[in-house]
Image 1 (cartoon, rainbow, N blue to C red):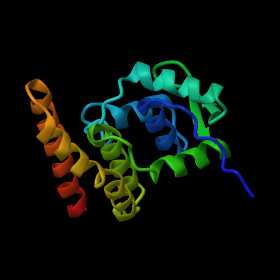
Image 2 (cartoon, helix red, strand yellow; image 1 turned 180 degrees about the horizontal axis):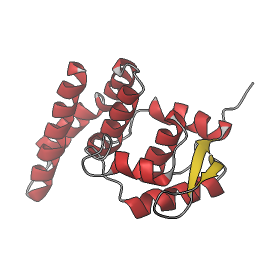
Image 3 (cartoon, helix red, strand yellow; image 1 turned 30 degrees about the horizontal axis):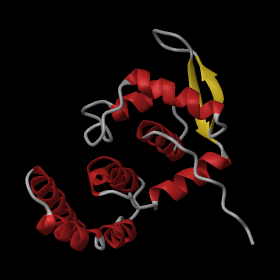
Length: 174
């Protein structure tokens, strides 16, 4: 029996950087453009330039990225072109297809995954179906909590229940 490698514990910013480098070798400045507030990915989840470089360093140290080459910069320092290692590519493949565990993560990690899958020209239906399977069992439990709670706990439970219902409607639309 083959045991798949453990998924590394990465921040969302690190997953984004790793996945973008998995698309094509890139340097930090190019990744920063994609994660800027008006960039393809930054519109969903903004990753500031210093965080991109910090993430790239951590991913390189972890053996998920390597410096493939160094190019002279036009007006600044040399640029390190990063490429993904086989371990990094495997981690990306697993992460992109894994649903998030909590409704609150749909706004961040799940939407980023949809954006990254779409950039790759891949369908999002399988991930949406897997995500629905995670969220659907939570909805009745959240409804019970809402019905049993009092005071602010009831308000919070109602908020969480409505978010789960909205998430299911959104997923059904995908």
